[in-house]
Image (cartoon, rainbow, N blue to C red; front, side, top):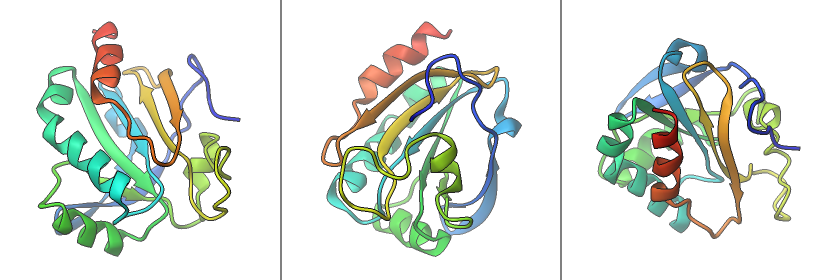
Length: 160
């Protein structure tokens, strides 16, 4: 079962790709800011390309709401690097939930998948973690459904 509003967001540290470089993303290191955790199923799939491209296009709007964005899926950091390049570059991290496999997605309740029959990918889901480390908003989407950034931004504005 997915985490709910008011739950403490499980901390994690994942290797991530930011452009051509690799780093680590640790949730607790971003306390004092809101964080959008965008769980997506796979790099290089049409909806994921559109979703992450949309986050990039609206990144300034997220920044204005004191928010960091991070994409998370079980693909490798090398796949994330190639995917970012394929998208023309992203200015937010794509974190790999590869080992232990889907550990973060499991902690957030979006693995194993709840709404589709594919056994090796996490759900498409968005969690807003507030500046105090609590889940402020969450939504699980159908695999073919792209999150609506305006809906997410409206929720973030409520946290200001």
